[in-house]
Length: 593
Image (cartoon, rainbow, N blue to C red):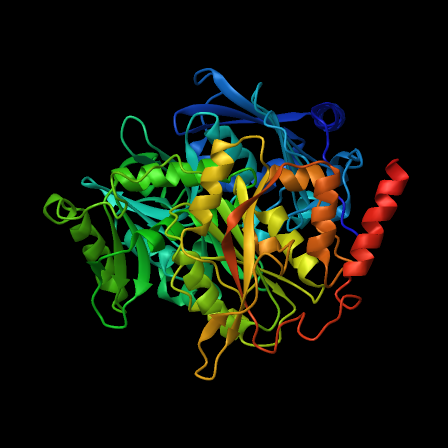
């Protein structure tokens, strides 16, 4: 089936918000309102719960932020309810079940005023009116909330609340002392939580082990968010002081043990700390913990990628925020030794001015922060052996604001191991074998960039391809797709790839030879995933019929390597669905005329 987008109008999105808000009001009339005020990063937020069920499930990790109701003007009001405890059903959503991204975005619902997301993990709907500061959180049953939702409640809504004030939720851990704070960033499993908890138990100040709030003005600062921590069960033995503080409702079959740090450690939870250092942890293999150099590319990915992949409506704003943060704060790799007891002292030494002042930001001071984010989508089916070359081709573009998304289309080779070994952070999405069109669609729905590019795993880009096409799009706002030509490459006797044939005559509608405005896929729709070949011709036929602004430049922008194992190797026109794409295009024109 073709996967269709919604392209909902602003009126439809506002109407849905109003109807859900009325259901929330009905739930509160049925059960009464339980008010709970918190002060986060200098802003007071009023949480209104429909009855006690959701209040109990969503406030334990926020209790350290609670303030009296009259503590300053209220900046935002969040209304929280569930259907089971209140007896009030929600309204049906005006989108299809295929509209969701992995991080909760709803494809086609792009209002800048009414933000929306849905997370399957907690069956949670989040809506937020950016203009009025009014938010809604709904789930079917408060008793079914997973451990991570109770340990980090209302994360999406609080993310949107903070962004209104130029603040940013960041996936990371933060600890500190009188000299300042260190922010630890990177993918899960690199040692952030363990390091933060070791520092907390040694007496250092704590701002978070998973998510914190970061501000830039007037100087970088980190704010505590959740008084909770998540630890793998087999690691809990290393922290015996935490055993008696499991979050109520934590179960043995939860992926991690959720620990509640309040009230036992409230005195060490710092509401705010000056941010003095950013590190990305890595296990060193030896006993000692020390600082090491960090590359700009690695740091950008570690600081932004997991945040973007978990927070709906993050995207370009997150990358720009992180780029500015990395320009202002010194950075390093934190090489973690296996002597856990020594880690807090090593962290404290890193924060002392003599050490800290010798460090520099990993981001060049002249780097243009305003460059738009480009999302690069690489669909892969059993192409693990080619992935490293494809990634090197992307890196060779030397474009600083990239989000790389690798989509596994049901591979049976060692793709995941290759992804883990890559020299940069990528978003890794997986699906069953559904074909390249469906894989690209999954990447599109999860992409955060204002511009999109596609690269098949066994192909390469010439150097400067992205910058050349981007310059054309920025100089010509009427153009939606800028593209060049695809050059066929074939190995010689020595195994070196050489150009073969005329690029003006081969692959005329190659997906990967172009750079697209993200809005092009909202306008034309996604790839038709009924095609396993020829989805490129079909999409460009629809784009030309729309009509979309397509500009072909007189240069080669893609190197197509033919190696005998390509999906299209040996296929005739019929097998490649070219005739079907042409027939579909003619039928569409006949229907429209």
